[in-house]
Image 1 (tube, helix red, strand yellow):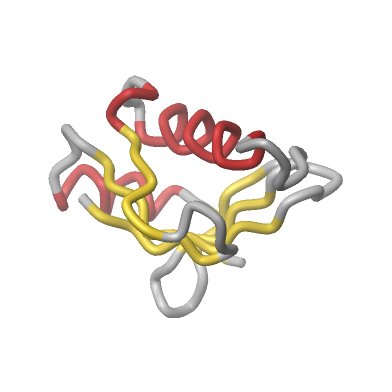
Image 2: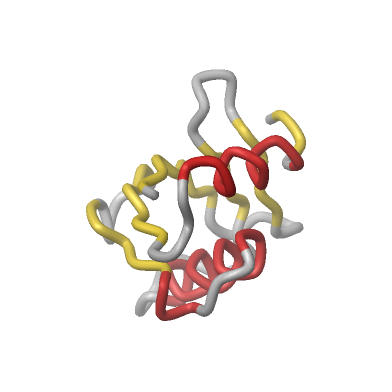
Length: 89
């Protein structure tokens, strides 16, 4: 499963929300320095979707706020069920 994620680093509280267009907005407490924000993003998404961290890879946009993330081991039905439990942005 591939997701489009909009990252907001240095947020006061970490969290995941769904945008109106179906993309994810992820607030991260880590700064975008030395890959800290990307590592936190991988950890948050792995926990939310119930997969190991190695199953989450940033396919495109590692240095951008908008990223394309690949989740291995998640089919569309299971991914849609998880997305439905997230709060709207």
